[in-house]
Image (cartoon, rainbow, N blue to C red; front, side, top):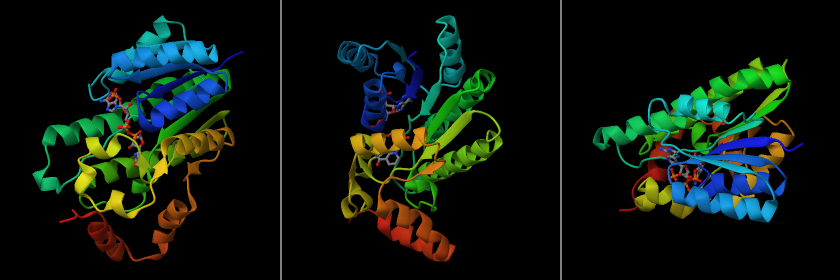
Length: 260
Ligand SMILES: NC(=O)c1ccc[n+]([C@@H]2O[C@H](COP(=O)([O-])OP(=O)(O)OC[C@H]3O[C@@H](n4cnc5c(N)ncnc54)[C@H](OP(=O)(O)O)[C@@H]3O)[C@@H](O)[C@H]2O)c1
């Protein structure tokens, strides 16, 4: 029997590629994002191409009750979610004291609160059914502090810590948790985070979203808890444990600074 995978942020970038990888592997999908026109296009494409069922739900995850409304709709539809992929997220570039407050607030709602609440709502049924998987999309930004993108880095540090903690709590159950930590990846992220001026996306090898999604899918199936695609990203993420934190802060400040 087909499993059902719920993916947030499925209209573009890594989320879209994850949706296609799960579709190729014969899973039904529940896809969530704000852009309903794009969701409908993806539904029609995937249902025809992969002979699966795709349920779409237009939701703004920055709204306070979004996760509860999603859960209620899924229950009304009598859909059982076997895999939950909390992928939706965005960043913002600039010094914190100059940032737009509303954007930082919405980032916390989407990157942290919606992810946390969807997990809280869907995990109990997975435990009672004796199987389930969660993939939370963090970032290599989860490991160091991130001057010039302080709220984004802090939000991803939350996702990493939270995911590792619940993975350990759920060890005695059949529910597995993977936290995917991509490095810079070619998606709509740079544009939306006003990152065009940062050195970060100029100085690194940029991964393609498809390979990140395929990597995440494989690691989720192997029940790997922390999944970092790419050797360079692994070295950067783990290597900083051996560098004084004061130096990491300074390096990150320089690495992410505006080009001019
Ligand atoms: N790209 C990178 O370099 C990179 C690196 C590490 C981690 N990540 C993480 O990977 C995840 C996916 O990002 P991406 O790079 O694929 O970015 P993307 O191309 O901008 O895609 C983001 C997705 O999230 C959805 N989304 C954004 N805000 C939303 C909201 N308020 N409510 C509902 N959906 C929302 C967008 O859909 P709508 O606009 O239709 O709502 C879109 O489908 C994020 O968590 C990001 O932090 C990205």
